Image (cartoon, one colour):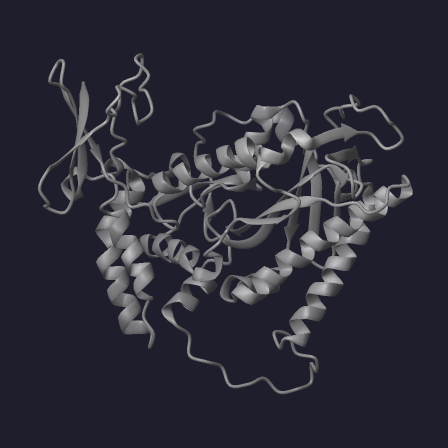
Length: 434
């Protein structure tokens, strides 16, 4: 009979049985073929970088800026150094039959820094949305990138970030209603899950939005007990250009009305406000940084594929207007459950991949960028830059990074959803993958 012992922060051990009073197991049943193995965060390059340079980084921030880093940022960095370390708290699971013990280190459960906790949250979020929220209909991913000049503003101000995400989702719904109207559908509804993200493929600050939307609309009569799903035609380039224009006009108008953009370009600028340490971290994370060429762990690049020209913007399913870029080329079919969860994991992914971070033999830090910039394949950040780029991710702008909109209710109501194509009156007409 297994039992679990807990110790944290020097408190005494507490007995907490895993077996209920009637012999039913209260926790998940372990897989017999797999043995638990601690992930050892202290052996990762990121842990070594943070542990070695954290105190000097915090001291420099206090000495250089009038306003040092907020306490919640410093607390998060320090808690990361305790996450997964047995000396800072653990559970001891003991088998009463054989007497064997297994020690499970406690986690920090923070949002911004710890790759392990972020990855666990990514998997949990994707599994919850797949199992409990998303209906079994085709899903399309919509991505909005904003001009370089607006990224720092959105990273600093939660009102502006929320407004841009809301406008983007509203314009997606407008586009769906217009395309549904061409098929004779009226009084339609849809839903969306929005993931605001603050990072790019080079640990750089790049605020953008991933929105997962059913690739169609729902209709239901007032007396009907179920909602019907109607698959819409794939948006063409004109649809995307129109949506992008609407987003650009509404975002710029909202920013001007709320004083984030100057209405009169000839008006003299106001006196600059002293930068805080967190503002300096945000501004220092905008660029790609110093790039270099290093051997890739993913294997050599095929010369044939390297010589192929990248597809032009007109060949992609996207729209582009004055720095606003909308992409809608990723679709997951209703029957592809694994693809659905994989898409949601990608949207909820953490800002840093430990597999791409390494420390070179000469002590320099290298981070493999997701998309090579010409011939350059890696960033070479300093230890100070790594700390700065992590701190910019801890701004409390994204206290609620997941936003659920309108029709996405828990899946208790999903059996009431039927799938149809526009023009088809059969209940069994399930839409295809694309």
